[in-house]
Image (cartoon, rainbow, N blue to C red):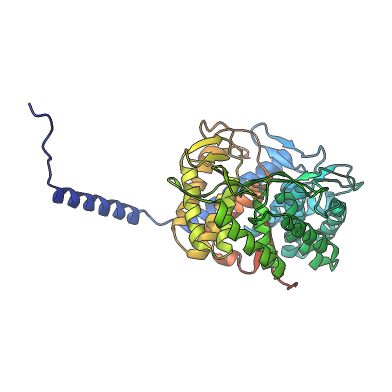
Length: 462
Ligand code: DMJ
């Protein structure tokens, strides 16, 4: 009896077989039908309308919709019209003119910031101030700018800390501040909106306060040019020295670059250059599973975690916008691996062990946004394929008969019960722009704020 089977084929034959298999798979990939952009744009548009109609039916006049219970949700007990303000420019871009007019009427008739509520400065700035400003720029309706100016004035007391970095919360009626422990994202993600407000109202105070805040934050970087995760705006001392590109820091980096583009600001350009060099040097991580950006201590540069998640996936877009297409492409491939691991990305993944740390999916846009920027820069159909994958998964797992919902887990695909306003402001907008003709929006003429509100590049500021 033989203890081994004789090889069926010689080495040369095996190599030839391997070559044929490779060729066949390449042909299969090449033969995959190209993504039908027009059909995909129409599908995304239809799903946006499905979501908007659900908001209209079950949550009209409120901040957000809970699509499973079909109930409204208000962030602070009273509505600030988060969904209508966040959605207005998407409605306009997608050509839903009647719906946009109805949303605008609701906003100008009903939105008042004279409310005794303590609001999160960052969230209200990126969603409401950003949405009102882009809405004004797209419609020319001065009432939207008036609302933005009123909101900006009510947010200004937030900057009255000893360092000039804003408190996390401010009471819209009394100006009382709270939340001295803040983070780079909430401090450094205000300059696009406050700067635009200055340009449109000719009141320099908005730009000056937000610029001082981002500069004061930058000044507190470590010797390695890194920032931590939490900082006290009264003492200026770091509370957490964990440095990464995820939630709590993410959009600070984004705004350094975008501030330089929107305002032609050389100070922001120089802060961005130093910062991205430090991220590439200390955070970028080559792992068996791909190219990632992990976590280090901001002083020592010592690695402290190998976590990456849905929020981190904004970085390919920012890398590409900053001219680094190579790193952007590589990182988006890793993000796509994170998405396809379970069919939808988790909130947090350990990229060394490829295990899921936080299994929820919050209908986040970042990975789609990055595919959009990469496709704009490269015209590589791979990003259309990625977009189609994202869209199909959203329809399969997150669609309900009343809009779309977040998931409790991408392992079980169990649904949660919320349609965050950014799903309409960002996730569906970036998906639509990925497939729609580029004439719908000229990316070179606008800068998107971190909530995907396009702000026009129509001025120059030193
Ligand atoms: C949005 O509000 C913004 O994109 C923000 O920068 C991060 N969080 C959500 C989307 O995930």
